[in-house]
Amino acid sequence: MEFSGIPLADMAGQINPTLPLSHGRSSFPSSLARLSPLLLLLGCVAIAARIASCGNPLIQVDEQFYLLVARAMVQGQHLYVDIWDRKPIGLFLLYWPAALLPAQAAIIAYQAMATAFVIGTALAIRQIARQAGWTSGATAAAIFYILWLNVADGQGGQSPVFYNLLMAGAVLAILRTIRASPGNRQRRNAGLGAMALVGVAIQIKYNVLFEGMLFGLWLCYEEWRAHRRLKPVIGLGLSLIGIALAPTIAAGLYYLAIGHFPEFFFANFVSIFHRSGSVPDLGHNAIILTLILAPGIALAFWPVPRDTSSASADRQVRTALFLRLWLIVAVMAVVLFGTYFEHYGLPVMLPAACCSARFLGSYRRIGASFLILLAIGGQFVIYQNDRRFGTGRTLQPIVDTIGKGSGRLYVYSGPPALYLLTGRPPASPWAFPDHLMRITEAQAVGVDTAKEVDRILASRPEWIVTMPLKNGESLPIRAKIYRAVDRDYHAVGDFPLGRRPLTLFRRNGANG
Image (cartoon, rainbow, N blue to C red; front, side):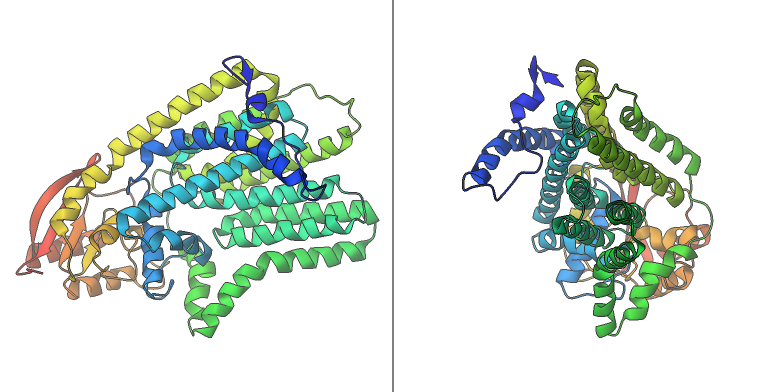
């Protein structure tokens, strides 16, 4: 790829893919000197791509909730017990440092953390591409990843924005095993390190298990290729499984120690199978996600003539095979999960960006034009999301109207960010609105949702927040809400929030 006639690879500097740390005293400073221009380039691209969303508390409903849960944990509450979700605890621990700060600062902090992870992942993509022999397109592939995230709700702190860095690190370790000679002890250690990173990623979101299984099978294949004996392969396989599961086992042991293992087990491993019914707009979601992912997947598999003259051609072929298998498995994981929300495509973008380096390096002008269009498209998506969901500016009048206080808040339908920004306690451990209002969740959250809504309304929270009817919402539960507000509450007003109004109800006689 070129920028104003100058190859981006030259702008960034040429980096030894292995970044040696032990070849003399000057090696590490020299590597840093070569890395600095690249880091500056990718940092500027990432900041420019994501700055339009900086400080917006309404980027995506999931990350609003992640920060809320982390704040609850900072205050001494236990996930799965005092505040409920089915995602692994590692995801919320990522948000913990940001949750230590005041609300608006916490929002900026987690977004800054996410941007740092994006830059780190882009650096890893470049290294992966170089090790596959696609050096000329490596920097363009890193930029491709940064820009591509914006079109799939990746401009904030969705979970793959964080764990993609861990998976990229695992892949770099696996590529090291491909380069190493058979019997090399460092080769085995690199494989174990790769699965340790996968294990941490699993505790951020469980769907990386599919990619982790591929990584483990590939490492076992490399072991078989080196020794042609079954015993070391079985031994390695058991070690890889143990290391990958260790963080999850540690989380389970923690909840066992505090007496809440049943809650941990149900939320993490049972609840997802209790969801019933179909996801609303499934076909529409699938079409949109396909349109988002198709260009990158096409670039990844586009036929480009291969240079087989290099002495390392065989190693590069094996590397390319592994990377494309990784992409195929990532796509299969999305298909198997089946809900097809846009951000579910974010894990696919990592291997697809790595594999796209070959095309981007071979067709530089086309690649440069594609990246420019992608940058513009990403900003357009952010702009449309702001119009659709609102921003901090449109949310602030709602926050000011609710105000501070000890009276409980019940966001039946609306942004969970209201809990964080008002400082008011949720009326239920099930603070994510969809968990109580969606038909699919009726028997999947560890409590009868209709009875939990009855309990919330009987506790007479000071404020109730509603928005217009959503697809997949339980009509009987919505009827309960409006019977209660007709009887015990008065409407404070309707507030525009993106394309849907939000209505505030306050309990009659409340003055706190």
